[in-house]
Amino acid sequence: MKTLKKQWLEVLSTYQFVLCFLFLGPFFSLVGFFLLFTSLWYFSVLYLVWLFLDWDTPQQGGRRNQWLKNCTVWKHLSDYFPIKLVKTVELPPDRNYVLLSHPHGIMSFGTFCNFSTEGTGCSQLFPGLRFSLAVLNCLLYMPGHREYFLSCGICSVNRQSLDYVLSQPQLGRAVVIVVGGANEALHTVPGEHCLTLRNRKGFVRLALRHGASLVPAYSFGENDVFRVKAFAPDSWQRLFQVTIKRLLNFSPCIFWGRGLFSAKSWGLMPLARPITTVVGRPIPVPQCPQPTKEQVDHYHTLYMKALEQLFEEHKESCGLPASTHLTFI
Image 1 (cartoon, one colour):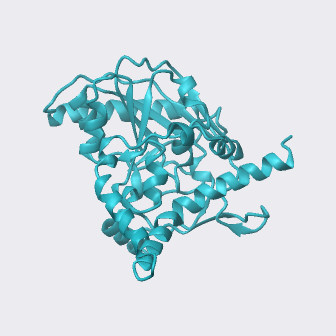
Image 2 (cartoon, rainbow, N blue to C red; image 1 turned 180 degrees about the vertical axis):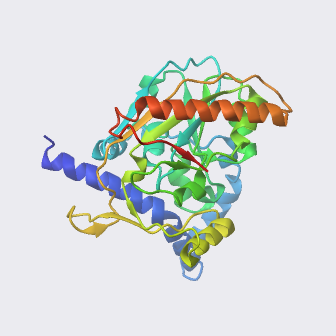
Image 3 (cartoon, rainbow, N blue to C red; image 1 turned 45 degrees about the vertical axis):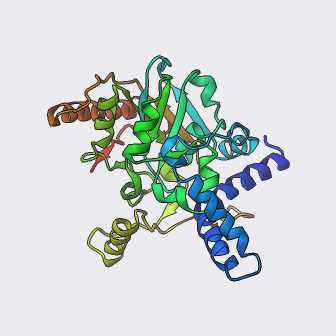
């Protein structure tokens, strides 16, 4: 049984992540803008100078702060759900990896806690590997968001950034990509497992260019931590969501969880549902600086089959009925 103090530490650690994820960037952007019209204008100017000097950091693997990465707040956050990281095979640090994490969910709690922090002891499970979670570029250029995520070793999910990480002379690099992205967030429905993957092949080209092994990972329970309002595909509300996604690269999902002080009320606090992230067997990929369409299609098919096999092998041990299957769109 958890003590009352431990329960509140878990709740507050989780709530700070939710608030930072949703509001940290917009809040500091507005504060910086309004400070320009006050006697404290020089704070905004100094930050803009710093932003200019530090502009390329998201394209160069982020800025890893070991103190923040090992901070106990992530352990409390992981214990709240709880989040568990499962290793099925060894990933030797004598090569590089492209690890694909599914599903996106609303906030990708499993992916963030497992591969950007030491909340679940990732470095002990996979010694010698250096994980770099890749996120949308826009998140790393908003004040507040930028410092929060870069300090955890997060980098941009564009080609320049990922090529930089995998081109380092020291092996044992693993870029972590949530392939489904904003589109998959629209399909976040508790109890369903719908992945945006069928036409996503950029990660295969990346792996082929660098000869990095493809590694599937699935977070069982990620879609269950929030209740989500799902709209019919032909409704104007869904059309609005898709339009915003295309314009701004994020999905305006309507979601809710429990209240901060009561599990019976509504709020932004996620539900305490177990999240189990299972890391599968690596798929060896040859190095091809100019991969052909046939090569990309071949390894994309191999990856989809490996991911589906991983799901089928572990779904029942993670609390899903045998009749549950993945759906690829």
